[in-house]
Amino acid sequence: MAGTAVGQRHAMRGIKRVALVGGTHGNELSGVHLVRSLLRQPSFQDFKSLEIDCLLANDLAIEVCRRFVDRDLNRCFSRSTLHSDAADSYEMHRAQEINARIGPRFSAEASDLCIDLHNTTSNFGCGIIITDTSSPDLHWKLQLCDYLRCRVPNVHILLDCLGDCSEEPYLPLTAKNDLTFEVGPQAHGTLVSEVFWNQRRLVFGALDFLERFNRQQLSDEERSEKTLEVFIQTGAVHYPTRSDGSLRASIAAELQGKDFQALHLGDPVFQDLESGEMILWDEPECYPCFINEAAYLSSGIAFQKTMRCQLTIPELRSDGSLCNIELPSVD
Ligand SMILES: [Zn+2]
Image (cartoon, rainbow, N blue to C red):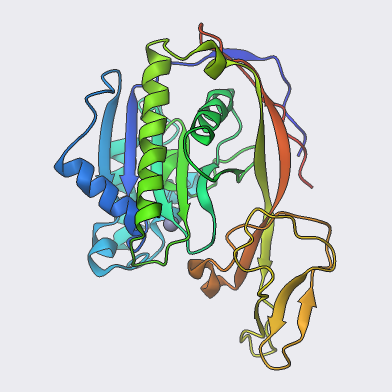
């Protein structure tokens, strides 16, 4: 789709109501334990301009330490799903409750921001995923990403939808603005200290940015124009399969763990499970991520392709005026 025009301005509203969600996937444990610890002992005394609502999303799945019970909760929030009457599963029922609490999606009453906490088995580092890139609010969200990039190691910023996202089904879209903190590698059902603490750094860094923005305390340097590396999702790559649908190959050793590194024409991608033969990349250069994500295997997805680009993020002015960000076209 075509890039959006620069120059339309609106003002960044004060960000007040923030939903912080863990356990959208019940076996992604750093978000579960971070939200639990904040429910036990809220540590928000430095964020007086914010109303922070901490929430565990999928209680039943957390109890049994599974991604979901009946269906993936993080696929239940599209416009059409929310408006369907088919609340026939635990997760569909829960989606309605969460939408009422954080949203309703698309309404003026919705929370200003939802931060959804996820883990991946891939070598993702500290991922920040933005799905709604369609409004001038992308401007401050990308300034927030840069703020976090300066404070947390190994940050990668992923834009996973260009244009209309109303049929995207993800939980954090119930608020006016979405952020997903996707941190890895961490096997599902386990807790890795570094991953937990990096996710905590992302959360508190984001709250710090918002508090300082609301109080007009960001420095000139922090608000200045900058260039930011982002990755734009362009499609999924599936595992090779046999005629009966079974897996024919694994991720090549050369690709394993190389999330966000360039994959060139001719590089090994898969290795045949019987012959050992390498299957080489035969498409244009891309930057893979979610390589060998465990939850994607049942859908046959080996990784997601992205393109890397440098975006110019205009100064975040103290009057809060925002610009649309020029995004490249993705065919
Ligand atoms: Zn997840």
